[in-house]
Image (cartoon, rainbow, N blue to C red; front, side):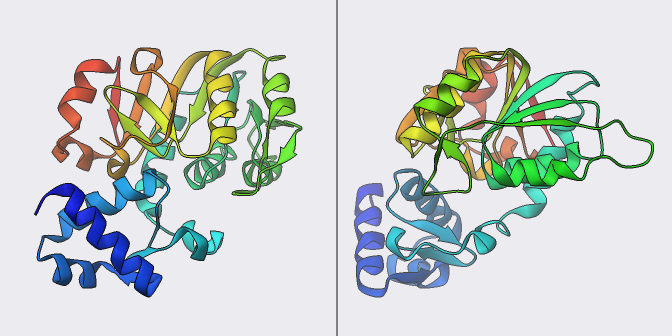
Length: 256
């Protein structure tokens, strides 16, 4: 079955059921679970559905943020811990909004000694309690702007303008998709503008993308491959079809 035909069948199932399990799609399409996983990742990057544990839902029936935050947690924490190893006391870093970067903030809270500039309320809250015994305090700067309707974060022209006031050692960003041709990409325009500004005003760009995001191109590219200094992904990524091209085009890849 051709890819576009599979997409149409998945769209039809969602239009009828609003929620559909991976097992149901496997049975209906008579394809492997891995094929279904790749199709759901691609359709989510296009904004046509939302993946949840065990299947997918329509965009209008979006899962609660608490549920989304529990998807691929182990892989996200592996990325976060690997990214922490790139940081040193005294550095200034940008961090954008997302469930991966929220887990990153939990790890950074144990490090201390950083200035963190973020548009994410959840990231800021995770870092708020970072003044622990034996560690240096993290200074946290929350960017102003308009409240995003997709996540607890600020976006818009004011946020982008505020980013332009700072120069950071690193931008730590988590995209919807990561592919060798278009680099890091997101679905939402205003979230993409924030990530792009952070990348432009940082000395180095670190992209945190678990294996499921590799080879995926979302709607808006915000950081070209040649501008990415480090891609942090999972060991499992080396088994993905897109990995070879990414390895050839990205300066450094860390497998966590």
